[in-house]
Length: 128
Length: 161
Image 1 (tube, each protein chain N blue to C red):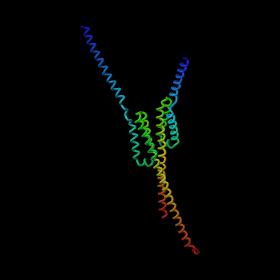
Image 2 (image 1 turned 135 degrees about the vertical axis):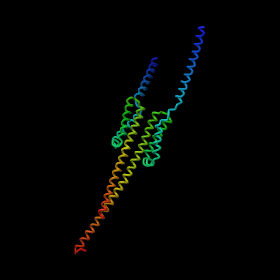
Image 3 (image 1 turned 180 degrees about the vertical axis):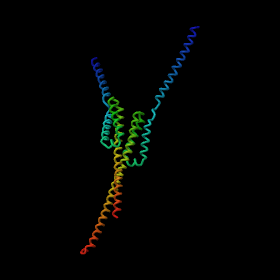
Image 4 (image 1 turned 60 degrees about the vertical axis):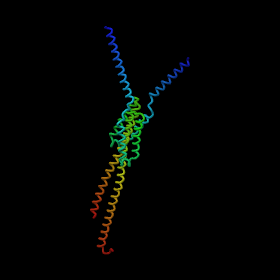
C-alpha cells in the first residue's frame, strides 16, 4: 500500500518535472537562430550598411527586437521566424553596402581616369 | 375537441422541430466536412519568391557574377516549397518565402558588387596605362629638348664637335 502511494507520488513528480522542462526551455533551433541573427546585425552595423543600406539595417534591427520580445513571451516559433528574417535582412544590408561602396569607388576612379586623360592630351598638345 | 386540436398542433410542432434539427445537423456536418477538406490557399509570397528567383536566374549578370548567392537563394525557395508540400503551415511558409525573396536580393547585390569590382580593376589598369603614356611622352619631350639644346650649344661653341 505504502509502495503504491510512493509510486504515484513519484509519477506525479516526474510529470511536473517533465512539464516544467517543456515550458521553461526554448528550443535549440530558436536559440541558435537568435544568436545568428544578433551576430549578423552586429556585423552589418560594422560594415558599410549604415551608410548605404540604412533601411534594410533598420528592418533587421526591428525584427531582431521583435524576436527578442517573442522570446520573452515564450512564443518560440515566432521568435525563430523573426530571427531568421532579421538575419537575412542584416546580410542583405551588408551586401548592399558592399555593392554601393564598390560602385562608388568605380565611379570615382572613372572620373580620375578621365581627368588624367584630358591632362595628358593637353600636355601632348603643348609639347608639339 | 380542444385536446384533439392540441394534440395535432403538438404533433406538427414536433415535426417542424425534428425537421429543423435534421437540417441544421446536415448544414453543420457539411460545414465541418468543408472545413476539413479545405486546403489552405497557397501563400502569394511563395509565388513571389519563385518568380523573383526565376528572374534573377535568367539574368546573365546575376547568374555569372553571383553563382553562390544565387544557389543559396534557390535553396531558400526550395525550402519554402518543401515546407508547403509537407505541412501547409501558412505562417511558416510565408516566413520562409520572405526569407527566400531576400536571398534573391542578396544575390543581386552580390552580382552588383562583383561587376563594380571588375570595373574597378579594369579602370585601375586603364589609369596605369594613361600615366605611363604621359610619362613616356614627357620623357620623349625632355630628350628632344635636350638634343636641341645640345645642338644649339654645339653650333655656337667653336671648339666643340
